[in-house]
Amino acid sequence: MTEGNFVDYVKIYVSSGKGGKGSSHLHREKFIEKGGPDGGDGGRGGHVILKGNKNLWTLFHLKFTKHVKAGHGGDGGSSRSTGHDGEDKYLEVPLGTVVKDMETGEILFEITEHDEEKILAKGGKGGLGNWHFRSSTNQTPRYAQPGMPVEEHDVILELKVLADVGLVGFPNAGKSTLLSVLTSAKPKIADYPFTTLKPNLGIVAYRDFQSFVMADIPGIIEGAAEGKGLGHYFLRHIERNSTLLFLVPADADDIKKEYEILLDELRRYNPEMLDKDKLLVISKCDMLDDELKAEMKHLLNKELKGVPYLFISSVAQQGLQELKDQLWQMLNN
Image 1 (cartoon, rainbow, N blue to C red):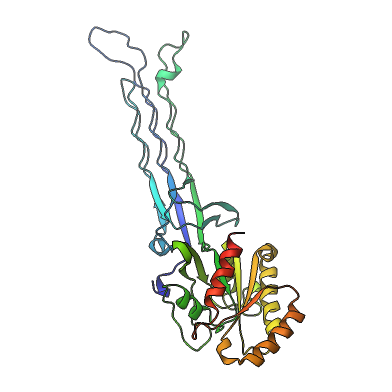
Image 2 (image 1 turned 90 degrees about the horizontal axis):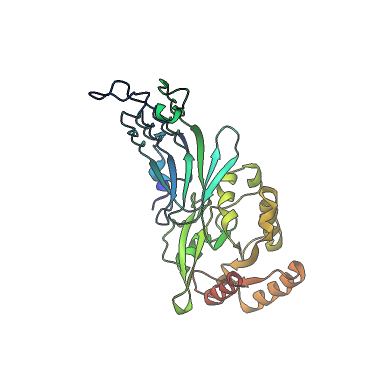
């Protein structure tokens, strides 16, 4: 899937169908002089329903959908016949879709399971026919209920990628390269910052036919929590990941400082993110000889105090199995 086809934010106006009117019909038949009321009920208006689909990864199919309207319910008829129900409108969305009210910003609900259905706009109830209003004192009521009106909303659909492991790092840290080596995903890779502009997902194959999902999140820059760069668009995708893999290149000026800046951006965006399992991975370690690596380990043990870390090289395929083992253990603890 190309980056242009990855859409994780759409605005839609939705409107349910109105309920049909109840009938105020009086029974007419030969040789029956005063037929009683026999007006039927109106049909229910159609719902607008969101449905989870595990085979969708993006909201691209809704990118050009601005208005969604369900069908109106039919009016009731004679002989107590009920009007037809309005046609429901289904919108299929990927798992991890959050629905917000555009006006208030309030989260209405989220879709996280396959085939899960939630009513976004409820169809109006059909009105009752005059048959319901007959009584001993009013044997020929000539009135019936109107149908209930439509329900309409302006909503925002926001996708937060569902993945087990999220790759977090500055631009050009080697996240896309790592994803391409561990999975069959083919993200765009180049030697300039912000090559990745949309999240990429890949399935990491593990021992005994087991697997887990890894997401390559576009690079974070300092100030991302305030929306710098495209901070908010990137950071919301990390909220769903149960484990965060912080990637810092071995040639960084100060590994500890880069790690702390990334942690601080997550804390300022949503403090709950710091409760997730974290693993620091120093990439591009093929540039280091054994002596330099030992020196860096000694320094990191002193500075990071208990933060788990690993050295890897995606290009030279070093430390990748150890990384998968560590991630699997963290995911299944």
